[in-house]
Length: 352
Image (cartoon, one colour):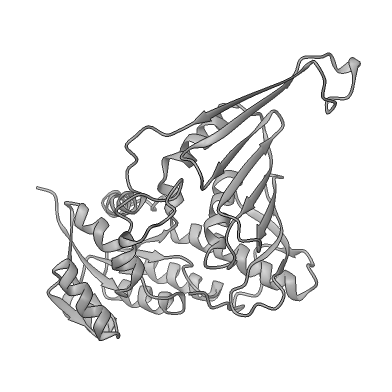
């Protein structure tokens, strides 16, 4: 019989417990169950045995809703007394590093940490190092890594259906760190490691504002980022023979193939005319879609048992965070290009 992993939850608020009750926009993003607790409850290999939160009302509501017997006002007590196999860190971002580090040191086999994984690269580096030293698998929860639409789009790219990826454009709600890491993570997924950032944070906004700018990637791909017009999530993959557009309005993506049948001698390739042919199709993943939060739980278990990194690893989470922090660094320098890796690992932005 397969082992059942004992789970401890740090932070008993919305994403840990009640997010499934909301009327949410889940297209190309998530599917019920979305909360950590509901995903663990849906997985036969996990059992929630303890939770911790300093807010007594939230803690008791969590315990009642999910029938969790052991409730603690702070996570250190929970880790010491319960020794969970898996820990979910679902507090606000400024607490992520300390909670994850304590969980690794307490012997947790795996950790699911909400994004953004930390408030600085120094914190992220310490989290990754402590987990590596303890043999703890660290998964950063970017749900689109587990949504089949993006794997389907990557397969179309790999098959050369729209040619070679040259550029991307991405839109999302404001908050370059809290929301932006979703967008940056997907850009990294399709284009590979980032090389530089030039951008600006939204004027007049403190803390974790929106912004806009450009990200350059080692692959030569360039990504345009717009995160201050309150648009829903959209990512367009622009190649030399077509494009793929993934958005928040309809499951799957739109695929455009553009072909010019004329000999090059008859005119520049960019001229439209009778010889230009565009084909458009809608492509959707097969139903039913496995809920990404549940897929993340299953992936963490497999990573523990197989000794491999999760599909959304600590390094992946760090890379997405680094782009957001580089936007802040670039903005203070008048949108000056900031080369990566970011030298200032102590640059700190508190997101929620």
